Amino acid sequence: MHETRVRVGLLGCGNVGGALAELLLADGDRIAERTGMVLELRAVAVRSLSRPRAASIPPELLTTDAQAVAADPDLDVVVEVIGGIEPARTLILAALGSGKPVVTANKELLANCGTELFDAAAAAGRDLLFEAAVAGGIPLIRPLRESLAGERIHRVLGIVNGTTNYILSQMAAHGASYQEALAEAQSLGFAERDPTADVEGFDAAAKAAVIAHVAFGARVVAGDVDREGIGAIGADDIVSAHRLGFVIKPLAVIEEVDGAIGVRVHPAMVPAAHPLASVRDSFNAVFVEGEAVGELMFLGRGAGGAPTASAVLGDLLDAAHNLTVGGAGRTPALRAVPRRSIDDLVSAYYLTLEVADRPGVLHAVAGVLGDHSVSVRSMEQEGAAEGARLVFVTHPALERDMQACLQELHALDAVRRVGGLIRVVGA
Ligand SMILES: NC(=O)c1ccc[n+]([C@@H]2O[C@H](COP(=O)([O-])OP(=O)(O)OC[C@H]3O[C@@H](n4cnc5c(N)ncnc54)[C@H](O)[C@@H]3O)[C@@H](O)[C@H]2O)c1
Ligand SMILES: N[C@@H](CCO)C(=O)O
Ligand code: NA
Image (cartoon, rainbow, N blue to C red; front, side, top):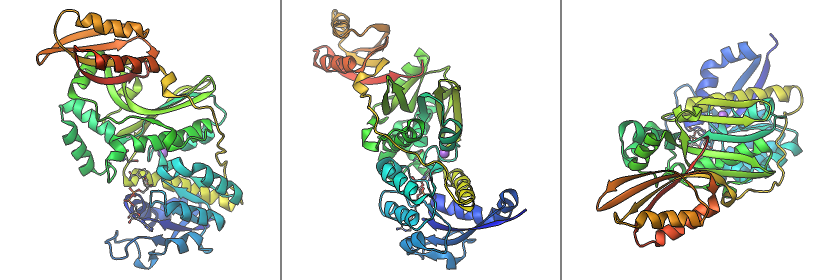
């Protein structure tokens, strides 16, 4: 087979960069045999030359001058796996500006500066590929961009953060406390260095914005995403969810309703029979609902050095192929779209209240719900310390009305605590 040599510059050699370097160095011959592409790792930009690296990385490839790697005319393709906004943004712009395609795993950067970067790629006539940025090793971006390019997608539901899925799964399966489960996720290495990004939903919000780019061509930035973390979910909610036939999952929801795009990230009550309900531990899964194609689910490892490096490798081969035929694949052209506020969401809700256990309380609570046109589908009452815990599931209601109910319920004398309000998704 005719072989094509492609000179690769790597920016960053942490979890993902290190795993990619290992793959290229250990498996290069097999990759070349299979694809006809010889991926030559020619430079690895690192922050510190003295940090221990995998033994197989020749030390002469290492440099602390990332800018020189990005601009090097003797390289063909650049991989950015430093993460964060700067210097990653400047480095990617420099690489594209010097005519090199770029592969990145950086959801945070794409979610904040996607338009600028895609425009730069289009202007350079080079690829900017980012399969690894969402759901790590799971092929998702390419199916959405290519296989489903003409599909009318209605909704994408994703478990796109492994840490929060792990925490909620451990709480449900083993009664682990939130803190215990978070500590385990950190020790297993898939939590972000600052786990706030995971548990407060920032990581999932960035991924949701990137999904909005490829599924809807929508110019959505991370700050546009309605976001709630999992911190308010208690062991009681997990037990109640199970009894009611639900599983609590950390979801990203990206949907088109009446021509407007809604993008939100929050814990959700998913019916136990829905395919996403059985996605446990640190697994990711993305459920796509399309007009012609129907329902699809993508499942696998959304995090970890090796799975993520696998996605980067696929992009590298794609970019290398496009370069050899003198072009680039399709670059997302993002357009401004009407945004659908979460206030306009129509959803069923799970709601818990701790109330005084005395006559008339239920009547007062029902009055507040009824005044806001919220109709109750089921209600359970159980004893709580010196009171009662009420667990409601509503029929579909308007978010704005539900929020107004919460305000009034807080103000009721007999209500001691308004617990979780969790949206039901996938019913
Ligand atoms: N780890 C995962 O599971 C995973 C999954 C999907 C996507 N990603 C994304 O991949 C990217 C990398 O993640 P990671 O887990 O490998 O992070 P990491 O922190 O392990 O690696 C980043 C590396 O970049 C180095 N670095 C920082 N500034 C640099 C500079 N100026 N020049 C050269 N090197 C520099 C750091 O020293 C570090 O070794 C991020 O964008 C992340 O969001 C990671
Ligand atoms: N912290 C992220 C890593 C992958 O992006 C997660 O838990 O999913
Ligand atoms: Na992916």
